[in-house]
Length: 381
Image (cartoon, rainbow, N blue to C red; front, side):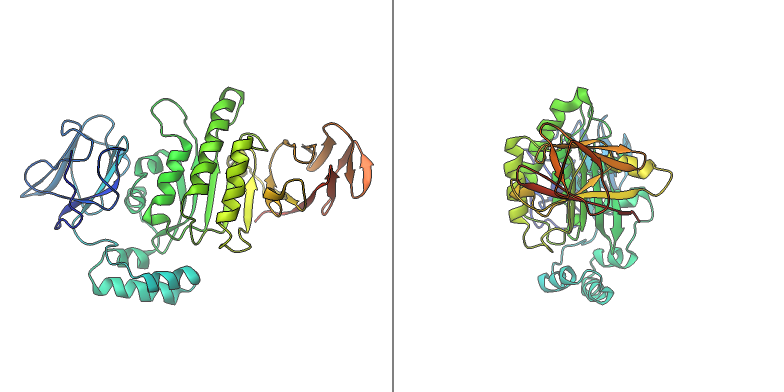
């Protein structure tokens, strides 16, 4: 097992994520020299890092990636991210984000749309020779490889398309975690989301979208992922800048255990605006369909307004396909560009009128067993 040196001199290897039980923690630094660097929980036969007269070099077995791409032998540059299994490390040739200034960072969090606050923080870093200053000023990564470096842990998933997002001032502004492949050997969805939200690159994340796998063959996996994902989100430190959280649950109403975590999630993030501008629960394929649609979509949403679902009260729910709403006892089916509301058992009330089914109009309210939801329709930008 590697001996982690928190303040090892540069050049050094910084631990971004480490296998459980390895003894290493994110932020630990390992000295890099002529002898192969001992990495936590990883044999030198799998990944070997050395420093020679020509610079840092890595040799990797199958399954090892550098900035998300497989390799066998390659020269390394500053910020390169190496991953294998649960280990993620990066090469430091100069300080990069190693000069925190809580007051300046808090000022950015308070007004993230104020460019002057970003400039003040970048100038502070520049005076200390910190590479993060140039990243903040450049704002956008120039290549997919550079984006993988900026992300750090999760670079392999980023290049594979399981993680994606938009950048601003050198940090992720929005991110999507999507299960493109749930086959053997791929990280679970909640593990990918956990890596993402713990990344320093997500410090100013404002919108997070997670899509769970759908389809009858994956229903059991989706249910398990939903519980694990909500448990992770409910127990982590809230993202201070987050304003939009969209969860593509396999079933509209999650299992009872997941429901408890969802209630905890809303409680913990009350420090956010209103506290969330958007908490969407929707079918897992919704975002993909939205991206593939040739024409602008209509934004259809439901807003919970009353019991018996207080944990969802006030939540906006985007609708992109047929969906069941057990909390209100209604199914919603898209018909000719409109939505048909159908009672699942007893009749429901639409705007105070008892019906078995009705086509919804903008502003319509549905009521059953004391629960109320309101339908809204508008243009999606």
